[in-house]
Amino acid sequence: MITTPERKNVALVAHDNMKPALIEWAEMHKEKLIKHNLMATGTTGNLMQKQLDVPVHSLISGPLGGDQQLGGLIAEGKIDVLIFFWDPFEPMPHDPDIKALLRVAAVWNIPIACSVSSANFLVTSPLFESKFERQIPDYEKYLQERL
Image (cartoon, rainbow, N blue to C red; front, side):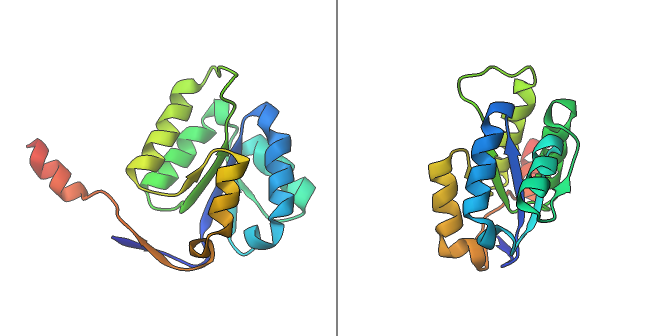
């Protein structure tokens, strides 16, 4: 178990044609979001910072490795929530990176929202602004079982 803090590290990601929806959603929930540390892949982060006038730590662009950077941060316990507006209709050249990001988020049991509705549920939950316990993989046990 790990305790997720009240002030969370929230990752925001959106495919190109989903960026307007993410920005509109973030504007609606700006007061809740600014209570947390925000980070995003490159283009999304830069757009959000301009549109919302809030600090957003921007990584590199998703297709250039930003999705993998986020996955690494999740595995290191440095991201508590993932809001990822991905496009289910548009194949992406970096689809394996996207699947890997979603997989590592599920492995480390962090809350994930992939649509406006699920993001609304997530940020309106009382857990979004409070501490909560979440299970994480027992890495030592995993290693022992593999030997």
